[in-house]
Length: 62
Image 1 (tube, rainbow, N blue to C red):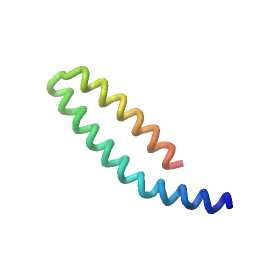
Image 2 (cartoon, rainbow, N blue to C red):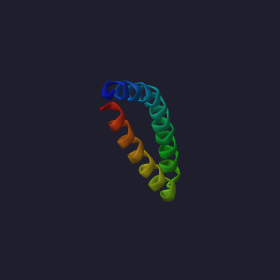
Image 3 (cartoon, rainbow, N blue to C red):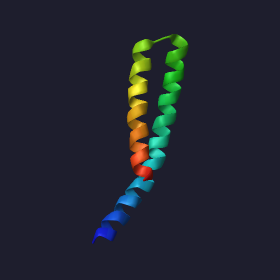
Image 4 (cartoon, one colour):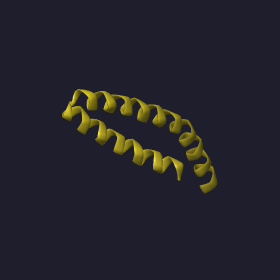
């Protein structure tokens, strides 16, 4: 039973990893634009979202 749950979780993670990578790329693009414009509010928001996405990616890759 434990192996079945682990297998299902791996398949979910395999589907989620590409989605997280796209989200990270999008946030990095937004962060880059905010840095150019010196939009400090958006910069802080992007950093927080990137940190959350980084943590999620680490959990998915374990």
